[in-house]
Image (cartoon, rainbow, N blue to C red; front, side, top):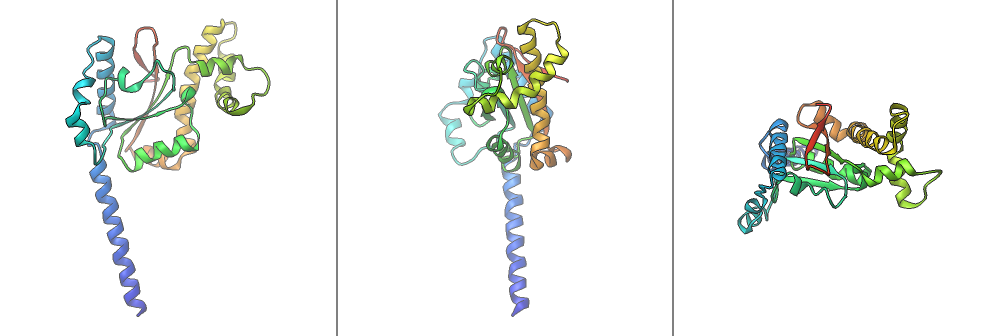
Length: 229
């Protein structure tokens, strides 16, 4: 009797594993991280040149094809700023990018869980941390004096390490330069924190299945520039 139960258990485990593997294969985008990054940067060039093609990839036929599943090839953790919509600045249509937006492009457990889902279950090979010039959340952290209360205080507290680092590196600089230095630091620190705070993301990066890149959007000319390339 015990042998029969053990045999049944092993069969069930095999079925679950085979189903998980099939799901992983089915949801994979089928392109590499480098290819995904090239598609994003190509789309950004379309946006800069005012030659958007997003309408062509967001029509009824695309919507219907995606109704039962998605295979995005890039995850973008970006700021909530209304001037920085990833789908538009990268000229990407329905089903192409998995976007997570929050003021200051900073992670918390819910943000991390969203990214983990896209990495583990949707097969996204690329994670981009996208900050932008003159970020209001970072400027607020630069201006902050004393303890900050409430939920906004939680955002500022998370950005404070980037501000402290900028103050050391940008001594004598004016406020605008200090803010930009803090923005750059915040983008880089967030990229590192994804690995520190998520064993799932770290596993996929260490195994070479996922790449993390840091980038900054220029509000003036629309360019997305990679940091530390």
